[in-house]
Image (cartoon, rainbow, N blue to C red; front, side, top):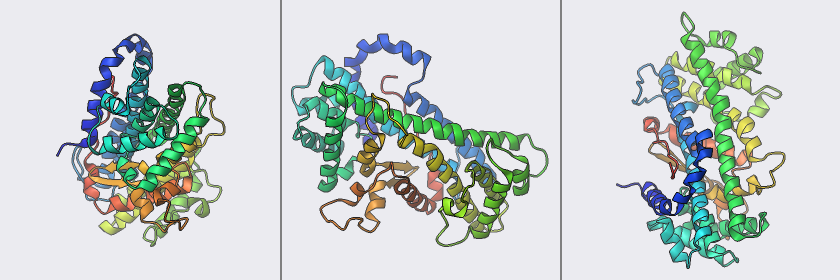
Length: 417
């Protein structure tokens, strides 16, 4: 069956390309620095390589391009999560390209704007609904279409819940009117740039820190003679700012509690004052311990604890400062506000296992008890706890179908590449 996302974005890219060839003279910038989507492609490919190397430690039968029935570790999830961020950047890129085309030739109608984007099917229907809501708030046709297409690579089916549609449109409209700029497309472009930067900076920060730490670990392991044991990892492998005693404490606690139910997840309460880089060292030791585990159940329990250690480091120390920075550039709107708008539409395909934030939200008790508000609109990806609990929900869903995560994503390419 054809992938509707790929079909629609391919059409959108083709439809916009002809109108944007005049921008070829600006390509000198792209020659000196990669675009966010080019960086995302590099990062996704890098994670795929690490996933197979580290996955092969836990399950020595795993071969590049193959699958494993062992519980996925954090680095098995990482390529899919990077791809999901890339889809958000793809939507931002399409919006920017649409804005540039609309500056040259404004759309005569919403139908004309959607035709220009080359969208069809459910995606077109949902974006039409969203655009109409935005137009009713005073946005021009092209401003509404540009904001809507920014979401085109996300779970726009969530807008089928009219409560989610109305909340999303209301928040988008409020952000639009608060954005700097006078011309409608200038205001929209600020929002699009904010989204693109947020996702790009988060992608880079996580990969440089955690991906870089994994590469250091794999290089250390390859250059170490003799059997690799958890004890050797804890005493011989080091990362900047990690403390050996802290790593050993976290590792010992995890070994003792790996099979607790529910699995412990509050690292701030378990290890107050600990430098979170120490958790990465402990996680690598846990992955080594999983390789030596006497049973698959014990192996999987150790993997899950190590993955939670890495995910905590990822979300608390790398993503959070990007999502809620101390100050915002004058050419941005609130990053937290942008992420709140998109939260109900978030999704990640972990191989063939699809996770959506809407599924997570609908599975939780109704936060405000108000039937007029949809559960997905009551959360924000910018809030650490909303994000953390949603990620843990995704982990548990994927753990039930471990081999399917090894269907690795096809890295995205820039629509003008």
